[in-house]
Length: 292
Image 1: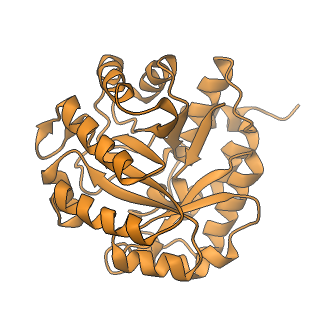
Image 2: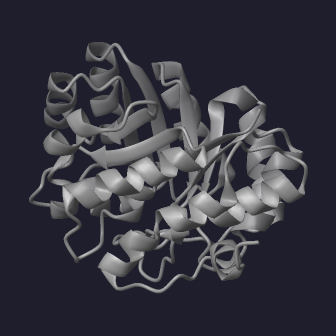
C-alpha cells in the first residue's frame, strides 16, 4: 500500500503573498478529495502574525469536507491549545537536522525544539508526525551528516511520534544520498514509520522517490501543482508535484487510487487566483489532453 500525504493547502500556500480566501481553500481541498487523495495537511496553528495566509485555520477546520484524514502543523504549546480547542486529531511537529535552520525558522536549536515537542506529546493524545527538515543539506550550515538526521528522527520516534517525514528542504539530494540515508534510517526505524518529503528544485525528486520506493518506503509528501517552497531556504523551488508523483507511481505499477484528471484540475482555480502558470509536467500533459 502506498500513502500520498498531500501538503498543498498548508505547505503549498503558506508563503504566498496573494491572500487566498477560506472558501477557495475549501474548494481546493474538496477537489483534492474528489481526486482520491485522503491524507491532507490543511493548515497550521502558527501565529497569523508570522504566516497570515494560514490565519484562518479556526474558520477553515470546522468547515472541512467530510471524508478526509486531515492534519495541521503545530509549532508550539500555544498552537497546540488552539488545535485541541478545535478537536484536531492529527498534528505535525516541525524540527530539522540543522541548528542553523531551526534558529532561522522557529528561533530554537534542534535540542530546544525537541524539548518543546516532548512536552506537547505528553499533553496531546492524538496522532503526531514529526518533520525533520534539511535532512541532506542546510542552506546555512551546508551538508548534513546522515547520522545527524537519523539521530533527530530516532529521537522523535522514541518520544512517541507515529512517523517521521524526512525533508530535502532545498531539493539537493541525489538517489545515492537517499540510498545511504534510507539504509541508516531503516537500521533504527521501521519502514512504515518513515515518509519522504522531496523538493524538486533541481529536478531530482522523482528519481529520489524511485530510490526510496526500491528500498521499501511507502509514504511520500507532495503538493498539488508543485506549490510551495521555503522562505528560510534561499533558492528553494516548489515541492514535488502530486501530479508527477501519481503519474510515476501508476506507470511503475503502484496503484495510488488517484484520478489524474481530477487531480490536475483541482489546483487550477488556486493557480489562477495566485496568478501562477501550470508548471508541473504531468499536470500540464493531463490538462492538454482533449476529452475523448
